[in-house]
Amino acid sequence: MPAILGDRFRRLREAGDITQRTAGRAIHADASKISRLESGRTHWHEDDAAVLLDLYGVPAAARQRYLTWAQRVNGPSWPDYDDTDADSGLDALLGDVPLQLVRGYEHGVIPALLQTREYADAALRMSREELCEDDVAAVLELRMRSQEMLFDRHPPTVWLVVEKTALLRPVVDTTLWHRQIDHLLMLAELPHVTVQLLDDAACGPARTGESFTYLRFRNFRLHELVRTQQLSGAICRDLPADTEPYLRTADRLAMLAAAPRAGIERIGELRRAVPEPGAQPGPGAG
Image (tube, rainbow, N blue to C red; front, side, top):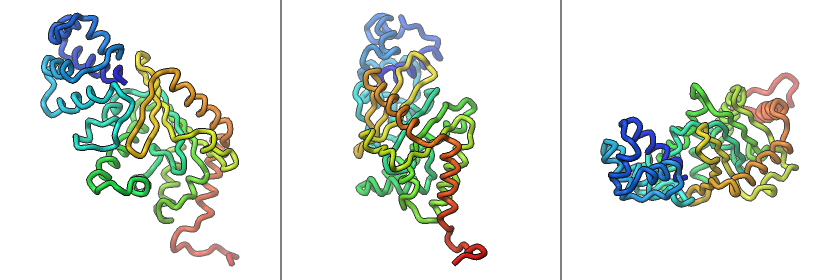
């Protein structure tokens, strides 16, 4: 995680045509410390971040988010919401870091990247009943914003495994469920998106103890990142010893799931099997 923030500071420094040596002097260090900060080999401290933000001419409107990131990137835990601006959260930090690959699996619900706004809102309220309206709106907006990468000019490869049970779970009413399935099927047709259907017999929840998202960045200097969602927020892991087991689990789930085209056909069948409200029975029905 420190390297992701370091990469942001590197871009700020280079945009101002400032050398590592000059930046080092500003924090009473040498160029090697700036190099270590930018590569994530040294933990960030708020005091160093504040001095560099002044040197790089970062406007006051953006300053607080960088200081909040500097407080958080050294640890694995990120709250879904708090008293600071939503733009200083994990989704905002990762928001403009180009991704190469996204893989994931979620227990019990359709993966967040494939959710409609209505489904995401209902799922969030169901799992986080303690949230006030403002917190729900803030978290929902961040989750919707994260989906924009699916339509980027150079989008990442996205490969998600969806539980059959999750598709049938009544998170929303029938009308909104049909919209959600249609949305999922539309996204699955994108050339860079692969969706696989996992039958109940594959026992997905028993094979992995938690929902997870695996991220690989286009910048080869950044380690792969695994994000797991907890009730209190997200936990991030970026050491190879921690991320590789999740990649192996993603491979195992993909092998157990239906082939992409076959799975999409079965999802379409599930949709057609649930009548839309007000739909008239076909000829010979009943």
